[in-house]
Image (cartoon, rainbow, N blue to C red; front, side, top):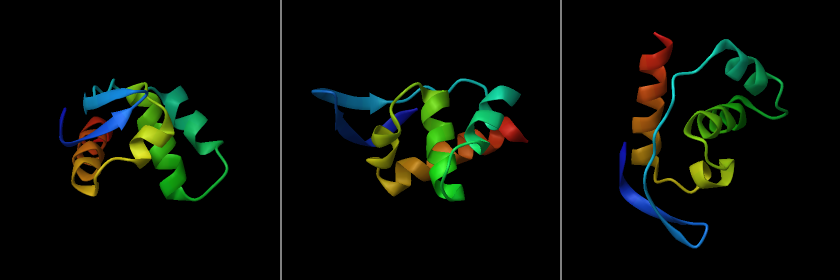
Length: 76
């Protein structure tokens, strides 16, 4: 997914994210994380995109909503 609002990341520019299909173990790992549901979702998405959770936290909400929709499609 090409980001509408790229972010600075690790001394470079993050302009796109690729999300792999989730496995049951990914969901189980996310559920073990301390925090609220939003924290768990951010870490779940970060794991699937193979980026740090801090990078997901820096996304513009419009880009985050699009990533949530991709995740939702995978889960339905």
